[in-house]
Length: 117
Length: 113
Image (cartoon, rainbow over all chains, first blue to last red; front, side, top):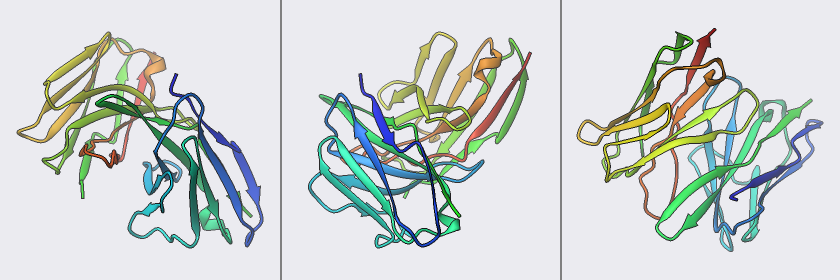
C-alpha cells in the first residue's frame, strides 16, 4: 500500500510554454501533498505544500504565479510550470502524507524530469 | 526554520565494513527523524525512521540512533553491500500538522566490492 504516482515521468518542452505534472496517491487519501525540486547532485528542496481544498503554501523564494499548484481532490495534486525557461529544467518530485491514526509517513512519487529547451 | 547538517558528504567503504552518517538539526521541537535512500534518477525511499520517544531502532543491517539533547541522529549500516551504494538523506520533521521535512544535503555512499 501507500503508492504515489506521477505523470509524466519525463517531459521536454520549449521555452515559454507551460507544463502540467500530476501527482496521485493510488491507494490512500492524502489531504497534504508536497512538491520538491531537485537539481543534479543536490538535495530535495521543498517548493510548496499542497492542501486539499485550499491554497497551496509556498516556500520562501518560490514564485507562486510561476508554479501553480492545484489540489482538487484527496488523491490528486497538480503542479503547472508556467512560461518555462531552461533554468526550470529539473527533477520534480511530489510526496503525499499517509496517516494511520497518530502515525504518519511521507511517500514519494517517482519524479518527473523536466527539460526546457 | 529547521537547519540541517549532514556529514560526511561522501563516504567510501569496503564491502563488509560499517558506515555511519550523522545528521544535526536545530529545531528542538523536531520529533520525527527519517532516513531516505535515493538511487540515481529514482525517488527517495524511506529506509528507517525514529520518533522522539525512543533512542535507537534497528532493522536488520540498518540502525538509527537519536540524541535529542545534542540534537543529532545517525544512520548506521553494518556489513555493507554494493547495493547499499546510493545517496542517503536525513530529513528531520518538527511534527505537528505540517509534516514538513527539511532534507540534509545528502551523503554519497560508495561500497567497493
